[in-house]
Image 1 (cartoon, rainbow, N blue to C red):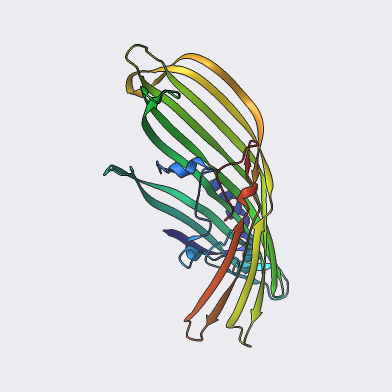
Image 2: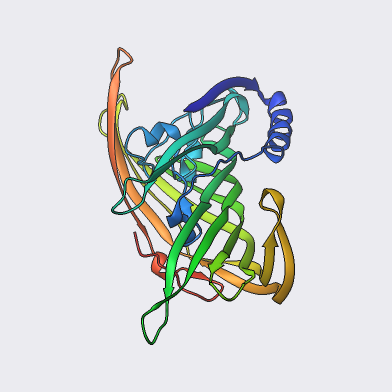
Length: 356
């Protein structure tokens, strides 16, 4: 679902709207349900949709796309295309159209136990993005936004028979709970401007997030020995400035400029995020309503410094547009995207991720 609104404002009103926009973004609450995706254990979690709703409905191409009714945050060079009119005798902005662009995602996922009829279905909803596009001058625009990049959310129970490593005979029964929560977010500000048929832009933001991994062995059945439940907990937090950039070039194919191809290239380089880790190993008992009652901390250490290596990625593509005199028309495009997730490191460790 997309919520978009265009408002025409005089230049005297734009400053007030920018302040109001920043305050609104600061108060946005990201709503998320339990997605229950075991694959979100890997990397920084399941990737959120990477384009706005408009282009998502057309195969998610973004490198060569630009318009004045939505915000293409993937390629900041597109910010130069916001609708604006300048004063007759100066280059100053007479009035322009501010775009409020928001997306909301609904999802449903079903997990099935192999070789059984058991299954579990969960649904969730979360904000996909909130973006504001503001024309500053003709062929020069600004964008403010907030969007989630990845999400972590799962809860999986595993019941297993433990065997003697030498004899292979069954020894105990164990119930283990795997829990994960967290994700990463990117509030950003960007600008793009055009000179002739060529436009360039850049975004700067603060990429931050957390990753909470919790493994609990709550039941260890034995006829002669009683065991306490054990807990292995690792809580990570990370964040640093984050940059990406893009460029676009328009090739007009007829004199009224109704048929044209817009080529685009955008991406980010490999960047390092600073982080810290809290480690906890303990035994515990379960109280009423599943409350954890600590018994003994075997090992605990907070504030362990580390780094997250975020991989480089780029997108190249084009969009062909044909506007007709009667207001109708069509467009089509294509993108090629590559991300070097083989370079990804989380606190010095590689993970089960691969290039895409």
